[in-house]
Image (cartoon, rainbow, N blue to C red; front, side, top):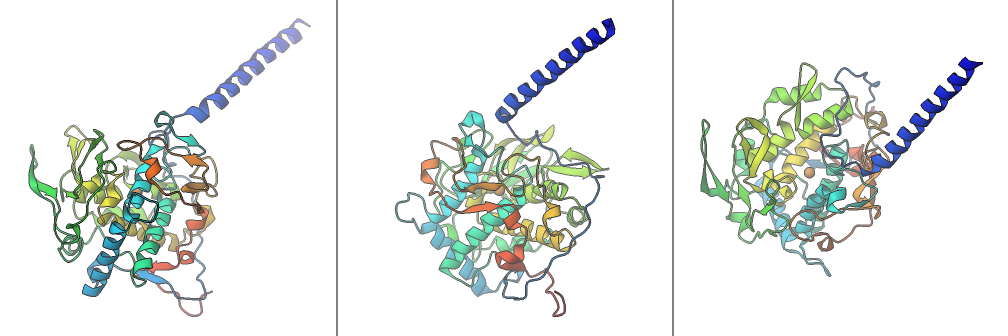
Length: 413
Ligand SMILES: [Cu+2]
């Protein structure tokens, strides 16, 4: 009798503790400040889903994104002319040009923190540090390409193969995306002297940046109204090692692929370790930052436009970098990682599960807080489009392909 009573008492205590704990979790979770430290991709030894290969569409009228080193003179001219038109066209009822609004969309993805005043469904950065990094940027590029094509239908976004040592010589020419920066010398103890600074010729005669959306993310101070480049500064190697790309392409798990290509972690002996690589290094190779000599993951000052991740679309090389990210993803998808089993369906922050809409294409479900300098949100023309990661998985459905992706033969379905 006594033991039954004490069992009952213990059960009530245990049940009560569980109830209190559950309530606490429910109350606390929505208030969590999600940041890149909160999410980790799964272990590299996780099980691999069965491989799924693409189904090719019957029509083959896909637009082709080309390697920048193969562009003809007239293709380069068409691309830069369309860029310049977007930069200088301010839509009716707007204060910012079409181009600047793309930059602002990208800046405001960093504004999804409660302490910045974010409201609504989105949790964490809708475009970076989590699984939607790849689909968010696929949609961002497709939108930008559509805007370019409204000016010249022949234009597609070329890609920059980071492993090709010739590519930068072609990109950084006056007849294309302009030279290295000049005028500022940076001395890094033990590493040497580097020159960078303002890029002011060719395309950039009249390329004024809005100083509130062009800033150093470490110190939150403006980087001014001119495009800045500090090319090939430490700590990233250039060209980016082919071995890093090969290792990436040998992974079979979407979350791991996504995290590795974004490039704030690297993989060593099946362990994730913080380190710059791939996409993040491509940003750094053009923009440049100063880092803590004892911890290269800690940036102490952003030098160039491309290495201020939020402001980076202000440097048109951004689009070529992300076309390469997207091309590697497309190639990986075609290697048997096609379809929905290769994207998390649940348990991710809102905006990062397969069927979640991704801000700013979320039908008004979420609103970023104040990020950047001043109150920037009113400068953005809202979009009515709703886009999920699921809708981004098949790049052919979006109407494009890459010159390195094989064309299906006639007998393939
Ligand atoms: Cu981005």
